[in-house]
Amino acid sequence: MLHGPAAMGEPWQPQPQQQRLPALGNASEPSAGPGTAAPGGGGAAGGVSPWDIALCATGTAVAGENALVLAVLFYTPSLRAPMFLLIGSLALADLLAGLGLVANFAVRYLLRPPSEAAELGAAGLLLAAFSASVCSLLAITVDRYLSLYNALTYHSERTLGFTCAMVLLMWLLCLGVGLLPLLGWNCLRDQSSCSILRPVTKDNAAVLAVTFLLLFALMMQLYLQICKIAFRHAQQIAVQHQFIATAQATSTRKGLSTLSLILGTFALCWIPFAIYSLVADSSYPVVYTYCLALPATCNSLINPIIYAFRNPDIQKSLWLACCGCIPSTFSSRPRTSSDV
Image 1 (cartoon, rainbow, N blue to C red):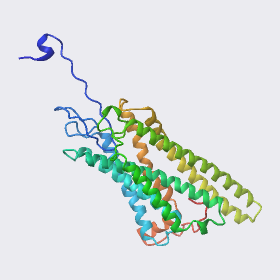
Image 2: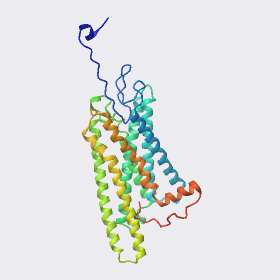
Image 3: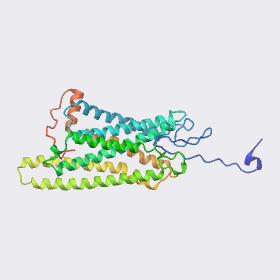
Image 4: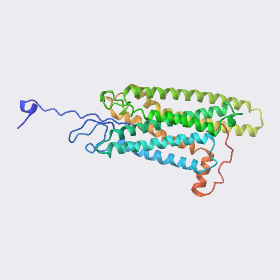
């Protein structure tokens, strides 16, 4: 026997499939019928999303790369300056971000039945890690600014203990941000209030995006000040001996090129995603979110290349660890305050 509209002679219409939403942590989702993919792209019935596989693979690469940076910093006693502590903070944040992406994938596809605490915990880990990554980038920018602005007193004022205290305070703040999903910053009870990344609500995502844009504006302002100071220093030493001017010019050019690479990469990776978080909601096509979230996560893959592997001291430690020697062509130019 037929039941429903077909029994009354009405044409049968297939029910639209519920849109899949990417998630910071796999928020509790309404149950789906047989053959229907659960929202969020997860679930055995709907298969594994290729986008989620890409995010998980990126997270694995991010974790491995930044673990290498931390190992070099930890096992090299000479790398104990405040600058390297900030680089280590950035590497630790990006390492946790990579692990958070992998954990998010595991929670969404391997944890059955899903645990609300695990889902919110994975979301909190990602929030804390990416917040610490952005704050570490800002701290490095401030450190570079102070090294040029107070070049004569920088090394006496920026002690290792002071830098450790600032880094600890920064991490406590970022861990507090990571606890927000567990403290109620989620849309588990009101699915209509979800942002493009569940379980963060639309209003909370807007607050985070605005805060991020303000931090980026501060970084840009410091970058402009660094450029002005560097060019002023270059003019001041132009009248000195030629080899001194050449060495300083090389250091200044390297510092400015590094800063340009830093902010350019940071802006390309994060600004589109931050702006999209302000204007979009969960009704927007999910492919847009994935296309913007993936480059944002790749920023944590690029950071070690910019900050760590381009640094002469870290390069030297890597050569010693890998082959036990330093190439004869390796630059022996001493590190200056203009270097990043």
